[in-house]
Amino acid sequence: MRDSWEIRFEWIQTILVWVALVVGVGLSILENGVEPKTVAASIAVTAYTIGMQAIPYRHKQLPLVATLLAFLGVATALLAIGLTGGVESPYLLYLAVPIFFASAFHGMRLGGVTTLVAIVGLIAVAATSTEDLLAPPLPAVTAFYALLGVTFGQAHRILIEEPRSESAATQYGRLVAAHQLLTDLAQLASSAELNPITIGRIALRDLAVNVPYAAGTIAIFDHDDQIVVATRGQPPPDVDAVDYGIALEGEDIGVLRLWPMPGASIDINSTELKRSLQMVGLAFDNVLLLQSIARRAVREERIRLARDLHDEIGPSLVSIGLGLDVLIQEEGIEPTTRMRATDMRATITELVDQVRTTVADLRPAEVAGLIENAEMVAADSPADGPSIVISIDEIEPPDTFVGTQVVAIMTEAVRNAVEHSGGTIVTIEGKSDETSGWLRVADNGRGISRRAPRTHHYGLVGMQERADEIGASFEIDSSRSKGTSIEVRWGES
Image (tube, rainbow, N blue to C red):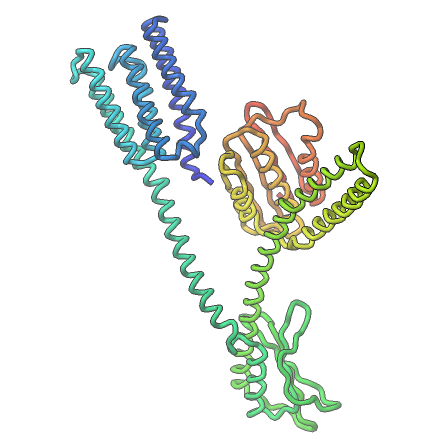
């Protein structure tokens, strides 16, 4: 994904280059008429403008391409200036285009060199026309070029280079901290301090020194179940057990159950009990945290496997099946060959069904937040596609059922925009809390054609059906001039 400031700079550059072109061509024709020099200048500047705008952004980011574009732009602008009046040429504004491009997109180094070359070239053009180098507007124009280069070179450093550097440093620091934590976790995972069975047995043994009980158990809560991790002694008949809750930070995570000696009562030292239960509570909570980490790792691996099955193996099996269909329909093949191909086709059909079932089983029941899913959708988009801008205010992610449908709508909408809109920017914006929210996916492309085959709109039908399942509103706004916007609203918003 590109930074938002890069996208804004690109818009500024687009406006600047076309305004400078129109001003230069229009005023030069008004002042000099349609003569060979005017036409030559117009053709040169127009060709450079079209070529520069046609080159994909990722190519313009390459150092060699950027340098060539900057210097070629300076040469083209100076040629047009020399042909149409020197320092009083209407193409003076166009010389700012390569300076802006080099400074805003590539920083002070290329921007400074481009600015210097442009100023020296303009002075050379003025000198060859025997003009006074100190007379207006040359000093003012050169000062403007220098100011333009310095301003946008610094803007590039402040808005693009420094945040990237800080982001990389922050990310590296987090990776180092995470690596250290995982190393410590790997060392502790097999230790007795994280083993609930060991901790439970130690706690029961220590309690037995000060508390005369006949039998005891310690259990850990796992959702709605109780898992007994340690026992001591045999419960005597006809004796009621006494339960003591094991809690950590106000949350019940287990229970200690003790059976007193027949005919006796348990007189427990509160300090001893609290110390023992605190150790057991911490141990149990550590186990639950480990289980949470393990479940997340397993969930991510299941998602990866499901994606590979859905995107690679499934389509490959479908292609094989289509090939067998063609073979079965051909004339002149042996009956035994046709029969074997038919059997193989049936086997392929069963495999495709099994893959679909497996993919459905591998998909986790829970859904990640909208921001996380939007980032994944953006990361999966082609590098040469439109820029994807994400602006989601997610106070709380939607619940599992609603979130699954909203994420599916977002994914399909972004895929349609990337593959079919022909736009340069796709925006994902919205807001979500516990009970309500909205999400909008918009592009600046060509809009949805009303004459497109109906099969092209199955994705829109699917999105509408998903919105209906969660009781959400679903709106499409599309036109040739402003692209397509798809919005879904759910809950109380």
